[in-house]
Length: 539
Image 1 (tube, helix red, strand yellow):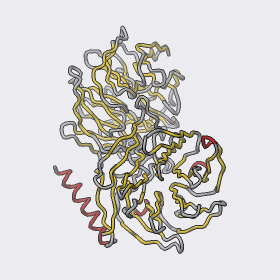
Image 2 (cartoon, one colour):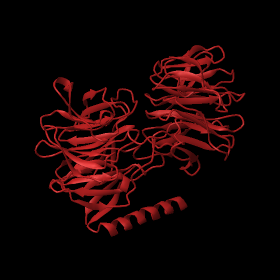
Image 3 (cartoon, one colour):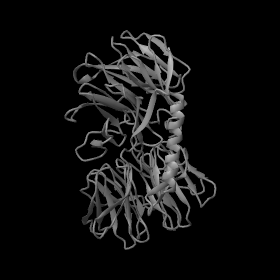
Image 4 (cartoon, helix red, strand yellow):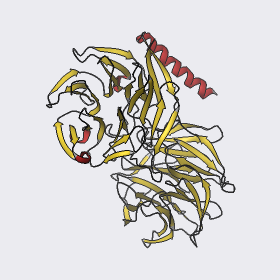
């Protein structure tokens, strides 16, 4: 209750300050926030405390199982944790997936970096004798032994296993883990570098763990299942049917099973005897980034790139509807981080996977899934039906056209951090250049004109009905309105809950703050600090 009252006081302070600075606008919550910024690895220490890791949030959390709350145990940036493990002596270790670093900490002692230069460092586990092992997955496929003192470099044991993800050592001192890309569970003799398949027939197995009786449990992220496997025979029994996007699991000394779900931004406790699941923490949204709005008869629908899901939000009620979630069987989605909407077209983009996806807004069907972009941070549909992509990796705006939109032609280069895009009325587009603090107009011939400068990390951008631009100036934690004719900047709302300091290096390892404008002029923006959505309307 104290935490809730404290949060309410902070929100009240934000809005009272905002109102003082911008009397003509009112900021109100539309979709409430949640505890994590995406939740992945789980582990339980000897005292029974549950810990959870977040990659995008770059933080490691301690979870109050009884109270259903979480607090940051290791903050950003070193707290980034895709997986967590505890040594026999109580030392906690965790993996920084994007940074390529592996850290450890004993009790309240200093944080020690055990390894670096391992992008995609993912899963880890201690042996009973205290030796530590880790794998790279997605950005690599290698098994290492890690020096627990952080002196010797990682020793490679095996590679090309098939995505050896969330693993644990079994009672036989063999390493058991899922092969993400092969649909199998395997055991590895780390001393002999020998791998043996234990069970197969999974869709996408994500993690395994043992209970005190030697039972092996597996989560299948695509099917949303918790499965018990006999380590000797490979026989499988579905223990619980959950939702897809499962990431990891941890089992405490009472054999309680805790399961994390990326798309739900939540953790469940599963009773292995009955299969009943109790939700400990959950979010309406996972990690909202870019947004777009479509309007029908004055009703706004917000299309949200929610990183682990594509969702829509009713602009009036705040009701959230899920259209697709990551890794679900049959779903087409690749970690959407930005979204735009125009007419019946919804365009999602992801710098992490280098993809741009065009979705039919009415049916939800994917029309096009385009790959091999260099860190695309936004994409819009132009009047002629072609796409324009803000490609941060090449500092360019790239026009994509032709059959199946396969023809790619740079419209302009040398942009300093192109993040947000919005179209104009005469074929021009407006782009935020986050690194340079600029908002620029780019004409159809590629000619650029700076509209506003000296801004602090401008990201999301939208156009109002009268042609002005609404920009999320993330570095200043405010929304501003820019007149495109003379560049006049007017503050709309300040002291906003935006500007999450996430993964090391800033952009492109960053979820952009999204901005969109509805048909009646209502402004919507995403809060990366709270995983929430707010609406801004004139009083």
